[in-house]
Image 1: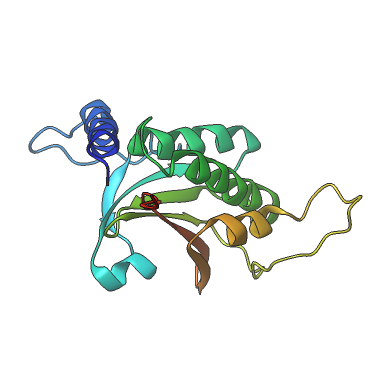
Image 2: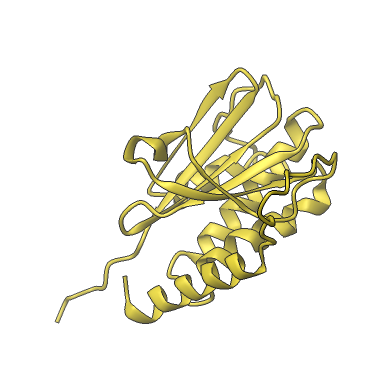
Amino acid sequence: MRPRALASALGGITAFLRSTPKPTQGSAPKSTSAPAPAAQARTLSGPAALAGLPTLSRRFAPSASQVKPARAFVAGLLGDEHPCLDDAMLLTSELAANVVRHAVEREFLVSVAFPGTAVMVTVEDGGSSKIPHLRRPADDETDGRGLALVDTLASRWGFERRPAGTLVWFELAHPTPDHTY
């Protein structure tokens, strides 16, 4: 990773962690019905768990108005100089919009991990029974292209069915500098 991109990504993560409220010693976590406003570190039980990667996660309400905050969550962790920022924001928007449109009305979870020189983003819905699949929409159709974008831009992607719903993930490899002379 380029030093400037690394510094930007670390700066984004550091700023995010500083803005996350920390529980006081001896206090029990409060239970609320609203989505948690802060990210929670956890080990991802999807494809990133194979490498034992820590992740940062945040829950969002099942509303179209939450697609933008989900995208901003990922952007904030990556930082302005991250080479995968634009693709990560676009693909996060697509997956979050799919959850809002196709899943049951339960909050969804967005998680970010950094395997090696890549970034992995997962979006886990709250109970959809639908299987994600690529569509080939007609030219005049106005939807059905989200997973095609994921398939085109991501280094790799996939999904896992779980008892509580579906987790869709994508991985973006950092672009390598072109060394042609």
